[in-house]
Image (cartoon, rainbow, N blue to C red):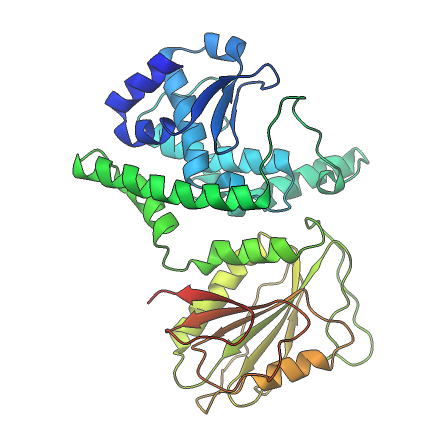
Length: 368
């Protein structure tokens, strides 16, 4: 392991710089290699079967899992499926950079270029279909056993601190490799997304929802609405009820609204969310709200009418009139308008274009 790491520093300085941050710890409970963000645990028998180049690959893989904050981004997802999703996301990066993979490396061309959050629901759905055919319970509702009595764990505060450190380490390693001309364009794009994402709310929204979720989400049958169609869909324990509000005032361009809706559609693949969509300037637009099941494509009405002043209160009043409260409300806006006088009794996430502040809830900056 030490020899492979030294060679990695010479051959692949970006990966080598990251791998140096992990203490090497032999662990019988570890079947191959694994990292908790602090140490790299390995099974001696597994490593002994690898060539030096293949050992460089597994060192780089664990280092990249840390640099991409996979230990921090899991949330309430099933551990086994999440770790597979992370491997599917990282392994192509290493192969494309010229590293030699061990024979047990999992590769799927259809996942190339996707994040772990995007891959995870595809793996989960496939696992669900296989379990259903065997009449087994959903893995996501089953507690995950420890790998062994010596397996370490991270508390929320420690994970948060480690995430900050790994962002700094990623930036430093990328800068050094770039200055030496040893950083590929593909890796540079991944690093840029992690450090300065154009739409940072995409991953942050997933974290926000998982923090408020009651468990991980599994496939459910369509909801049957009865009575008044304006009633917000009732929630079941395995689902998320999400209100998505779009500011259609003159300061928000149509192209920006379309981009926001497209990104929400991408996120819908990560969670089992039923969405109530509202467009609002000074009041809620005609024809809204629109309701979408987890498997529906989120779409605006044929024409978005707006352009007036901005008042956020109509959206919150609408939610207050519903029989059940949402798990979260996500509002896309420039934050220039009238806010409610008090914070609502459910999580609110503001995705803000511009530099305005919000009086309550969480705020995510949308970079220009």
